[in-house]
Image (cartoon, rainbow, N blue to C red; front, side, top):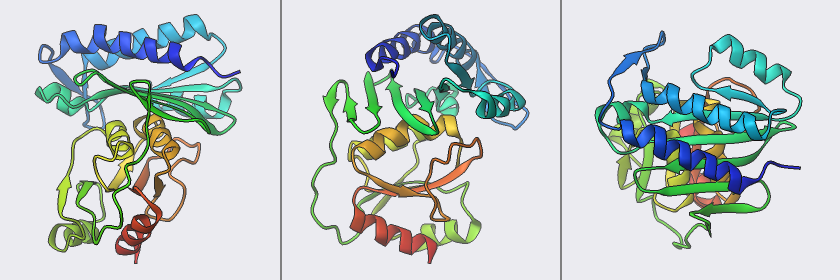
Amino acid sequence: MLPDLNQIKTIVMTCAREELTPRFRRVGHDFKQDGSLITEADLATQLRIQSALYASWPEIAFLGEEMAASEQQALMHSHTSGLWVLDPLDGTSNFASGIGHFAVSLAYIESGEIRLGVVYDPERDECFTARKGEGAWLNDKPLTLPQRGALVKPQIAIVDLKRLPEALAIRLATQPPFSSQRSFGSVALDWCWMAAGRAHVYLHGKQNLWDYAAGWLVFNEVGGHSCTLQGEPVFNNRLEARSALAALDGNLFRQWYNYLCH
């Protein structure tokens, strides 16, 4: 039996409100070995959520972004009773800079599939949830992609340029097939905002499992289309970073994929 989604949602929202929100604009930051930012809020939130999950489901293994890479790899190969995958603060650079666009992202993987996802944005009090095969919700209301009709070209694209191949980044900057481009700094919220119809196409060159797992499930459950730049499924039940491109409907997806990959 799957863990209770409402209980998971309560854990994530409570921890975010009590660990992230009070520290926003009030904490400094440091740097990891790979040069990425880390704050006290990342560590406190991960510890708090890990403890809460273990108290309710002690048999389920836990993988958090702030764990050592060797420990993460071992967990991917050894868990037998499901696996939690947590990004305690997706959008750390935004958080550390006082930009109110960040989220907690928690996914549950079982038998090689993402079965549950929760992404909570405490600044907007928006909680996106999904259960594989059953749909997705925003603040407990069913989430469906809006019907916009055929588009001559995408109006809004969420594109992270810095992690793309140089030639592709230059082509997107100089010959964009869309009207307007955004880059918000939170992969989890990128997927959820796509699921809410707030952009039409998406592209990211390198995102980690804890960044995308929960948000990708939300997007997938509303009927969005996605793959990597190599044409593979975004999720492959491995820890390696993945590229991702996505669009709201099949026709737009084909146009976007052909532009990017041909």
